[in-house]
Amino acid sequence: MTDTIQPGHPPDDLPEPPRTWKRRQRDIAYVLWISFLTAAVATMVFFASVDPEVLSGNNTLGWQISRDAGYAFGFFGFWLLTASTAALVVMLVRTEHRAQDIPGLRQRRRAAKQRKREERARHGRAGTKGEPGT
Image 1 (cartoon, helix red, strand yellow):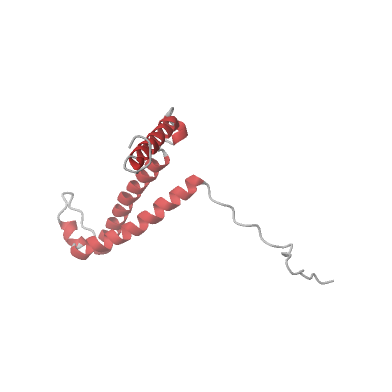
Image 2: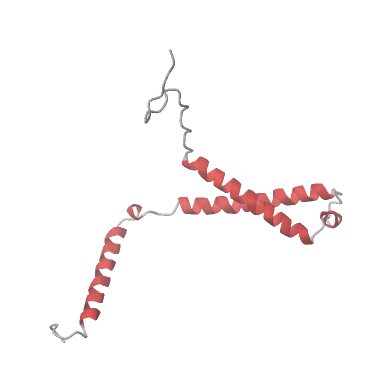
């Protein structure tokens, strides 16, 4: 007996759809990926003008590192810097106050919008003929 698929009906053996990531997982992925790309560009720009072997001779500890190790340390240093910056940005964006969290903010915003509407109405009608008070 063969299984035939009816037009418009999905087969019964479809795989489960991929589960969605949680918010924190997405934030971590955003931070790591964007900081990785930024660190790669920063490494290219920095080491286009600076030789890592010259830098290794200028340190106070007297460490001698190869050119490849210098590139690696530079890349991971830039990655750490850009990842911490991106993480700080994500933290600041995620912890901003929402309007419903601040007591009285909605009422103040409504009152401000009402005042603007009234101000526009007063100034808009002031120069027209046939309006009362002109």
